[in-house]
Image 1 (tube, helix red, strand yellow):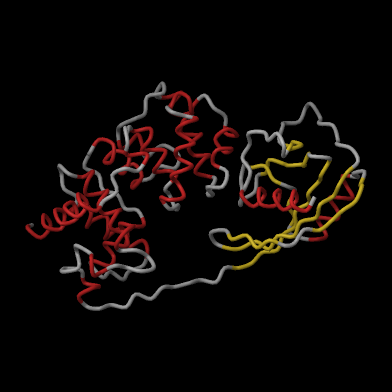
Image 2: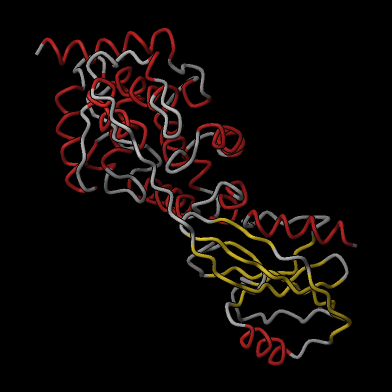
Length: 344
């Protein structure tokens, strides 16, 4: 029991002198800000999240403002942050809170985990970091600290079960907020993925990986490369974009994409555009989470735009780069736009 108290107190003491206390979501904190930050921080580094969080809160300062917005408005601010399903979950959650909870954010763990994109760890983070409720957090940083501390070598699901049990014992009843933040900060600052700083770690005296001088082998998987083609239809300063239901960038607007060259030519023939001329851009290798895209783009200048059919949903637009519409666009599309403007 003394050892458990020592572990918790050691990391909390370390946090007082070395932890992060001035992150944007820690200043004038509330449950809404914590929720947004926790969703943004899923699979994304703090440094990357900060500017997106600041812009997001400026535009949507509270749940009411957010619940009255559209998915496109949210995706517009999210563009470049990646893992766009998170933005979709934020939108879905805002609508549930609006309709079911009358724009009052639920403060009950079991109500929280029913909301889109909020699992056990995220719900615990929202409640412990906002209200100091006694719930543990098991994010990537905390997993790394505990796995190395106990020198655990199990497969994913068994490992997580063990780590949850350890956290439930270690998490102090009255200081859950500081303990959780200190564990995340330890993983981010000291017990890092690439270069762990064991010499200045407050837990090294009892850390089994450090004591036993265990060499941590990093498994680097080679990413598969997929070929694809973008058709860039250009009319003066306008570009043809389509809101697509694609696994890569679901609900975002981008150029027509093809994974077979034959499909590309069939599409051009079927659309019967009045072609002015066409040019090829240099290929781009764009890295996604599990694989990379080898992107080849063909710019086709057309003589006139086709008129929209009134009955159809507005999922196709002529995007004016000089006067941009507020829609979600993947980062790679923005890069291609800048390449085009340099070329022309």
